[in-house]
Length: 214
Image 1 (cartoon, rainbow, N blue to C red):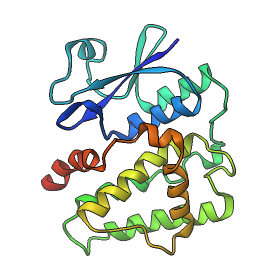
Image 2: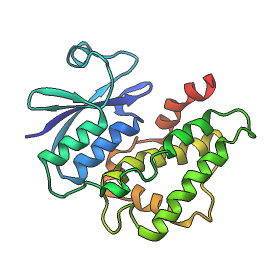
Image 3: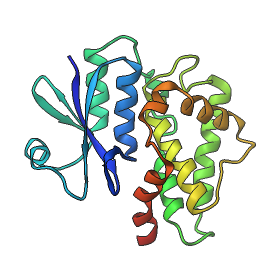
C-alpha cells in the first residue's frame, strides 16, 4: 500500500514539487527502497485545512504511518528503515555525522554580506573535511554503497551548488575532486532526478527572500 507524504510545493507554483531538502531526503529514501507513495504538495502561502488539522505545526515533510502523520525527516527515515529494511540504508554510526555541518555553513555564507567574516572559509573547511573522508572511504560516505547519510547530504549539496552559483557566482573548488565526483554521482542517480525540484528557478525562488533579508 502506498504511503502518503506531504511535501513543500514550489514558491508560486502550488502544483509543482518544491525546494525543501528535508522533503527530498525522505523522497529519495522512498525511491531507493522502492516504497510506493502518494505526494501531497503543500502551498506554504496557503496551507490547506486538512494539513493543519493533522499537523498543527504546519511543517514538512510528514508521512502517514498506520493512520498517524509523523513529522521530522530524521524520525521518518528511521521509521522507513524499520518498516522497509531492504535494501538496508542505515549508515554505520562512525560515519553518520560526516558532512553534518555543511548545510549550516552554506546558509551562513549564502546570507553573508561581508566577504571577510570567515563564512566562506568555514564552508571550505567543511567541504575539505568531506573531501578527505571520501578520498579514504568513497565513493559514498560509507564506501561502495549509498546510505542514509548520502541521501541527507545530496539535496543539501544540490542547494549549495545551485544557490551559491546563482547568488554568489561561487563553485566548489576544482581541487576538491572527491567532493565534485561525489556530487556528480549523487545528482545523476535516478532517485535524485525524480525527486529534485523540476527547475533550478524553484530552488532559487525559495532562497531569494532569505538572501534579501540577510
